[in-house]
Image 1 (cartoon, rainbow, N blue to C red):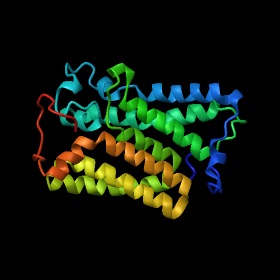
Image 2: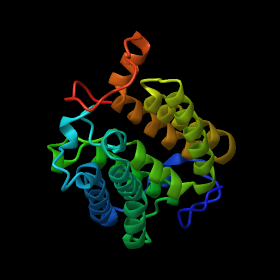
Image 3: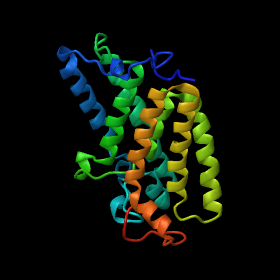
Image 4: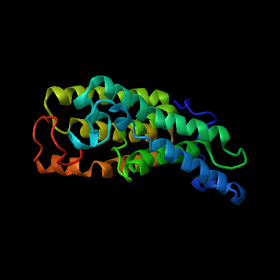
Length: 238
């Protein structure tokens, strides 16, 4: 169920090193491409969405410049933030794929994932926000959607169902639980139905996202989570 990204190979092949072969003459273009992806990812759409409101999203709620925090303030502005963050991955992957040297010798899967990682990293460590940023869920979701649209729809359906259930049951960390377990599910789907290379990249993304949610996980496992959040000065990231 690949298909969102052009020229993805049918199978990962045997030696994974084959997917990372880059001629030295192509290396500058590779690095420039990844830098472009990073810069695209660094656009803080959560902050942009709040322009004109008089509210700095980094100083309310959880303090996290991401979709969930904007949602606490305004549903309409949250939609803007979500669309912007989701679009970072497809835009970065599409642009670099278009200009990538055809002789790079790198498999389509690897190219797509590296571009996606760069965009997510830019979102999480934006130079426009003094190398702070969001947690990467929406941007990584866009990467998932463009690389594996069919499997991404399965994952999104799972995420939506769990997120709704968590909200109704007043799970404080409903977003973190839904987001991270969705990526765990996606790793399993890649391993079971697509290939080891795809599953490896998905697992690395999952670990990175878990790292970005470490405070949420610590709160969850410690049983110290409080129900609900209001619009208050940030006391930690959510």
